[in-house]
Image 1 (cartoon, rainbow, N blue to C red):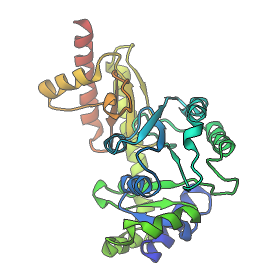
Image 2: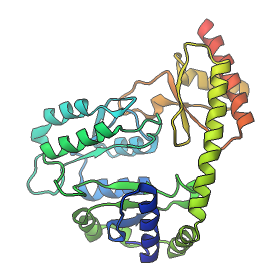
Image 3: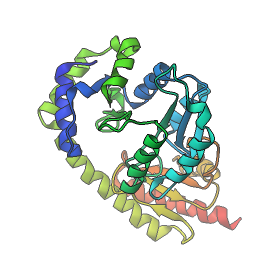
Length: 314
């Protein structure tokens, strides 16, 4: 589904970026990554099914899964992404509930494998292989190339949030289930499809991403320098090599710090606890570098550090 020309250009773009072939026929256009997840959940699963998810994840999708009362099963993550040994324990504990021969799928592993939102972590290569072995062991995946894996992407994160255009790359058997009953079969903006096809074909998206990567790197380095200069030693942080977030552990309650920053300095921070499945992460925050220039980001870190040190001393 979606304009064939756009899907062809997108397949070429992804092939070049991934270094692995992507076939147009394995692509289906969506209204963004959240739209893609909603379609998958609504068409292939019911609220009684189990969704295995990082214990902290993209806040919008966490809220969506909670709102529809899916059985979300949080799995802890570390510096190498989701801990697959912990995922295995949870799957084995629920094994009897994941079997239903009358339906194609009875559970979903939802994972942000590259520059995780909000932590910025990447699932290591060893973990990726471990995940596939685990899925095949429990018959959650097939032994062919695509298996049951769906890659859920979005131009909103590549170009602009207002684009509301994304894609899913999936094996034929999954696409067949989606296209048979999908609301994606109507409501497409062919005008927007045409624009995105031209943006890719003219090389504008590649040029923009190359420029944006350098810009975001400079901003993250400015944030890193400011964190080292102004933050006390007990504050820890992680600067990802990609994406546009910096992950900070303030070692004090981030939500309370955010309230003070808003009242005193008129800027907000995002408490990581807002993006958790079952709580936790009270002292961490995700700082976005995509909107502001280096001088503003440096000033924010300086003021944030002042608030943290003052709060800690109380």
